[in-house]
Image (tube, rainbow over all chains, first blue to last red; front, side, top):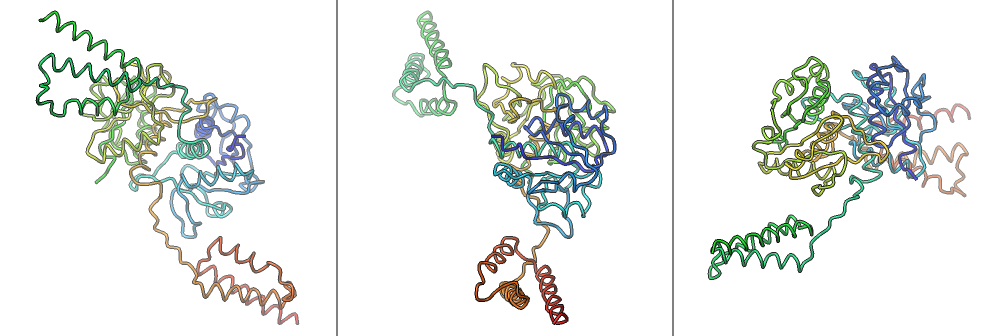
Length: 243
Length: 243
């Protein structure tokens, strides 16, 4: 059950075919497969294929539509991405909220479209008004010129996080050292510190507390503990040779 | 007080100058200004400038460094972005957690670096180990080939959200209709529905409940309510003429 299977990306009147290819790649990295192109200036085009690198299946399956209506056929929720606020605007969502809404709609069986306008002018008002929601990606107030494929990448990423969570599946095991072994290490370190004259047992101060704080924060793996015990033992031996 | 002012992006041995330009643009859209380039294959380069479109100030201020050590000088926190898990890995953070950590460190006065490797091979182990954290951007398990500039865009976006929140500043006011006006509208609609024979007052069913649910969900603006009242009044008149 893929909760993003019913999400389509709609690119309206895209000027540069390279952006179509880069958008296809951005989609595929986040598990989106359905691309619709409304009246693209040039498509198919070798520059689109060059930028897709590995996402040529998304490109090959792209639907070319004459109108936005055609691209939105069957959708139950269409979200228009716009860079700026409009006079007669829908209540606007931020990118994260829009992705959450889209992923939830798709997971419930709805058909969802994310609609992106042209590189320069964005979407026309009559295109925005065909969607039920408007979404903005928050940008710097002084420079908001997000590249089209970059905007698709951010939304695709947010959709992936909304559907599958932010975490990368963890195939790594943390082989943590046990409490008793860690306590033995602290005791060994304290013995060496005293034997070497670094720590005065009559006035120990907070040294061991600091050591515990450091290794507690980092959490020790079993192999790391063995390495530290090895160092302490080498130090013992060193001390013996020096005495 | 800009909490992202002390965050630098470090690109290591970047192959394609276009990616440097696109990364600069991605940074600037999210309010990041400091770029360091470790041993770039070609820089400066007209292809970098072409892709920067408007972020040429970021590009012009970029520091070219011979080594990663030079690029990390002064940092208190360096986070390595890697596409895959490594045998001897740091505990890995997801992109969102890494951005939160970086923004918090910068806000507290720390100097932070986000370190990105080459397009094909990523970072070498000896580079990763110079950082205190490793971060991964979650991707599709079947296609994780995020473009370098796209990865910078996602991290810069997450940093911006971590520092300033996901929302676009709202300069739009919602001029909501008042309770009394909305109740008058419901009463008017009900009168017309009865007068026209659509609603039988002896068996009203759930019609008005459905109407309230619809308009309650959408929330009515004052102007929208005036428009609906105008339509109802026109309907009244129409009924008069027909009778």
